[in-house]
Amino acid sequence: MGRKRLIIEMGMGVDQHGQEPTVAAARAVRNAIAHNALPGVWEVAGLNDPDEMIVEVKVAVPYPEQVREDEVLAVLPFGRKTLTVESGGMVVQGKAIPVLNDKNDEMLIAVAAVTVLIEND
Image (cartoon, rainbow, N blue to C red):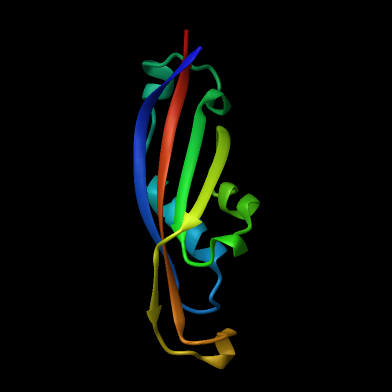
């Protein structure tokens, strides 16, 4: 059984304070899916349940080993979800504000690609 891609969505997310790569990654995924509707999942692909679609997420973020994968995937409302995290994105010098729990001056930027696929016979 093969797979066919329906859509690839791209997004960017930033954690300006707190230096949490998970926050930046989750925001990138949320940004990727924020302005999309997928009627083709039902009307073209013929799925009966949105959890039948396959959702592959790839995120590039500073400090990928710190990403809590379950929190990033929780952004997605439906699908059989997988996540690949790799080193990338960007670190930009910001301003540490102690009351915001900053550990340093870093702002973390993540990029994400969310691919929706279906199984085909």
